[in-house]
Image 1 (cartoon, rainbow, N blue to C red):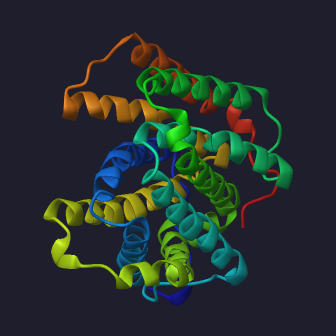
Image 2 (image 1 turned 45 degrees about the horizontal axis):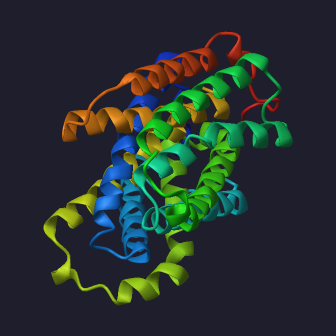
Length: 314
């Protein structure tokens, strides 16, 4: 295989392939809210964030090196990729875990359901996407469905007690939206694996000044085995596979069409709670879930696909 061939990314995924990848990413994300909250009972937020970032950078960097014979590459986009790593990895993960330690998984799921709205706004502001009524309507419907589910499941939680954590999570959501809105052209030029590995390494290195002091106080012998298992899930699946699936889908769909799947996370979390914890499925879950599915379907329709980026991919 020549060097130029090794650097040529594969063809963009089909719409079906991209949607299938996002369904897998949504299942991982739904599990993450619960698993991360459980792991935070044993780890301090910065300990968990630091270990997660370093572990994911090592795993994805190694995979990129094996798959691409050379691993990481800035592909002429050094500043952009470092910035995306700091925003979409460092800021996103530190704020998410620090906020979740002071909030609840249901609140985090609701806040991450705001991702497509932020992505679409950023896409319009930067010219990456054009106004599209059907896309905007689909996002609004899906967000309404997510709100129905979360409102029904968190009515007994005191909002004031989680406000500080919710604000930190919201910062993480905005960072993730910025990462998603700006990543598409780089992903199409580099490929999802190399882009994911490069931004994860940049984010892990950039986060060391914040996470390293916390990790120095870590007492591994005091951490239960289940918490280590949770960390492994966050490294391999949430920060590894889920990032790769998300960015891979960006090669075949617009950023807003990808981001709208964040609305399905609260519903998927509720379904996971039903399967694993035996929690009941009520009318709000059925109604909200139906709205989310309708909104997602609307954003994936042929008409919504005309909201393609105004700039041509590299």
